[in-house]
Image (tube, rainbow, N blue to C red):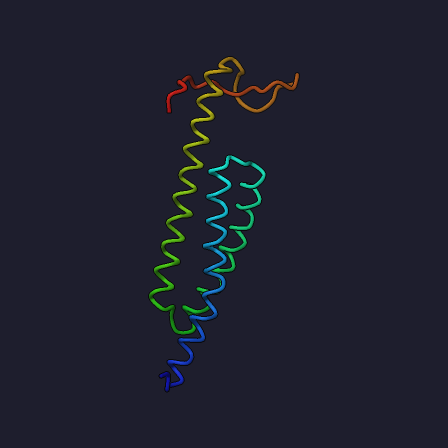
Length: 132
């Protein structure tokens, strides 16, 4: 049974942090599903939602840290979510690099990047293969 003001405050803090953390976890799951489905529109929407949820969670956790700390189980869940964000970022970077290599192989003579006066891409070719 909670008897002290400090215990009551800690319980209230944990309750206040649960909602933004749960929203963050849900947005991570949605982004993972959109990536798995290769749905560009859903990926863009889920990434935007994730960005907002992450900003809200960081704001809530920073305030809680200034006001006396964050309970360990919530800190651990936030750390797991942070790791998932990093893993998804890395997966997107690898996919982008593989796509760039494939484009370089398929369209090797397009120049130095961007678009030329005729509207054609002037992308620099760096060689490569379709093997990732």
